[in-house]
Image (cartoon, rainbow, N blue to C red; front, side, top):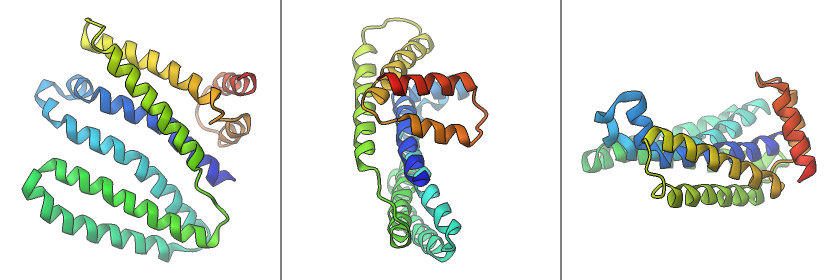
Amino acid sequence: SGLNTLVKLSFVFLLPLIIIMVAFSETILTLFFGSEYVGAAPILQVLSISALFYTLYSLFSVSLVGIGKPRQTMYAVVTMSIFNFIMNIILVPLIGSIGAALVTTVSYIIGMILTYSYLKRDVHFSFPFGVAGKSIGGGALLFVLIYFLKPVLSIDPLLEAALLIVIGLFTYIFYTFFTKMVTADDIALVRSLNLPLPKKLFSLAEKLARLV
């Protein structure tokens, strides 16, 4: 139950962040590193997508270690390393850094699939495909909203990004509670982890989960 909730929340929280990183990659790079790094935007976009698969792989591998199956995690790591080594040799000379980013992303997908399949053998756990689908739908909604509003706003790029992120996140949060992706029980579980977050935030989230 706890693992299922963590996987659900990984989709719910990471997907909007990934969409924001993909949509505003050039703005983010310019803000933190300068305009000379704008060319690295495609790499940032690919690596942003890999964050979801890395998180799921990490959850599954830690769970395997927790139930006394570290060898299965080692098998996944070895497979990922071999794939990384071979594919980097092939792709990096052909397409450069973007090839390395793509290989990293695919290796995390492989690790996620392997650790999930190993975990299923010993733990009663079902991947929350329903929530994953709803999260992807919410992410698509966020992306479309940003895509259509961007040309309408003719303001400073940083202000534009900030405004669109706020509008997009409010829309995504409403969608999350409206579609029941996050329940009061999920929020209670997160609260029990004693994360350094304001208590009022948890109270507001629980009220929204019960109202919608």
